[in-house]
Image 1 (cartoon, one colour):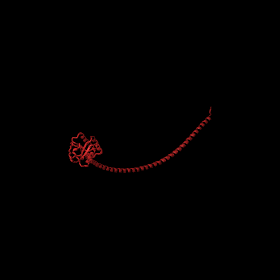
Image 2 (cartoon, one colour; image 1 turned 120 degrees about the vertical axis):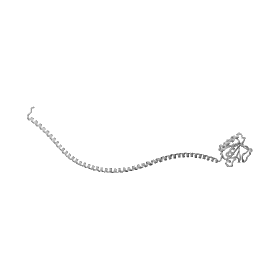
Image 3 (tube, helix red, strand yellow; image 1 turned 30 degrees about the horizontal axis):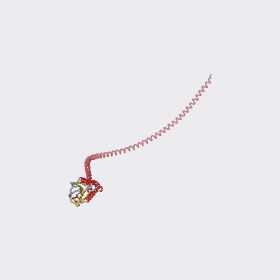
Image 4 (cartoon, helix red, strand yellow; image 1 turned 90 degrees about the vertical axis):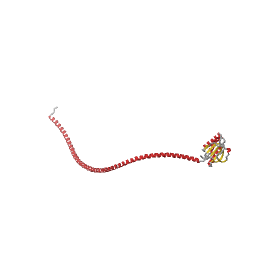
Length: 303
């Protein structure tokens, strides 16, 4: 289509007007931005001033605080230095005192070593004396042991002697049981004749003679107590013998009598040689040479 010059001018004007409007808006925006920027700059300036002021104030306070810290440190350092100086002085004094004590201890150690040496010498001498004393003590112990053994043996012998003495002093007796046992051993030999002679004046001899006679009579033997000898041989204990020419049964009966009395703990022996019709001693009593028994018993004191 065709355009006219006026129409072209109008389009150009409108285009420019629109451009001018856009530029105006752009200018307004940048003006506004510039204002805000100026505001921000002003605020920043104020902030710089304020922060600068505060920084200066804080710098002054920091300097003052650092001065105070320095003063405190210097004071503390002086106090510490004084304390260290005192401690050093005290340490030096203690070191001197320790040196003196060490010297004294060394002197004491030397004296102690000297005493120890003497003590060792004394100990060696004491050990030697101790060894000698131990040897002597061992010898004494052996002597004591031997003495104790001898004492025990002596005590045993004394006890045995006392027992023997007691037995010697104790009267010889025959209990009823012993009398019955003697009779039982003699009874198998039948009736035998026995003469009994008492030698001695003691009542114990008379009592024993009676007990023996009773035992023999229980066996059925005929017993005659001839009497008491007033003179004759010196004998002890109980002696049993047989008449000359006695037969074997008589001799066996006399041996049984000896054994029976010995079993009753009456010391009894056979006397030899065989006797005859004569009586080899003086007797107080009834003696008949014509009626001599085949078996004769002599009862005397304990042996």
